[in-house]
Length: 271
Image (cartoon, rainbow, N blue to C red; front, side, top):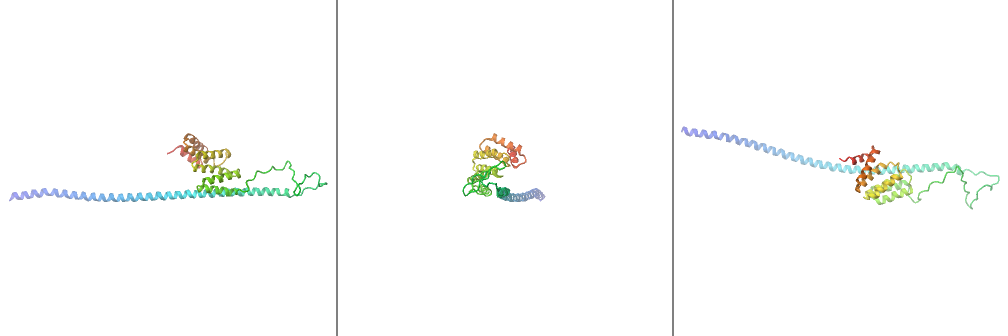
């Protein structure tokens, strides 16, 4: 009987550690389940974060496109306003010259003792030609084609066609502007935008030729930095990297505070 009691006690003492081990395993299982739940939550949060980042990137892209459109529209407006102001200034100057010449043109000719003496011959039905003296101004420059639109209208239409991607039509209109109005404040701009149209058409040699013409005809133009920088980009498209670097270096050194100068520095030291 005593032996049986001892055996029962031994069996119970052997079962106690097994029960404790089972409890430890259960606790570990609970902790693993908890960790798995936390990992699932983290994964959901990560996926939500990625979706939000994607949405924000798309929103930023839309805003960037809208800003580019606004900048292009504002540029069109500024070009149109500049052309209008120049047109008004030309008209005011023309009217001023006419007002200054009106008294001399309307003043009666002096009557000589002999009315027919010393006067040039008069064509039948027409007034006498005024004699040209040392103080008479030389004849004015050749006027543009009377059929050509006004400078403001022609320039604005050309830029609008460029902005819409009608590059061939814009080139024709800018060329018409230069042919009829070669010496206005916007003539150099017209020559520059011809190059931009050719560049947009991927006709890089023609674009370079247009910007070279700007450098020759309008060496003091405020479009020189942009023209030299874009010429460098066209050269790079043609695989002439060393010549492009010369253009970038020129713009960066001569026009460091311009937007073209900033872009040129980025080209010289790419990240």
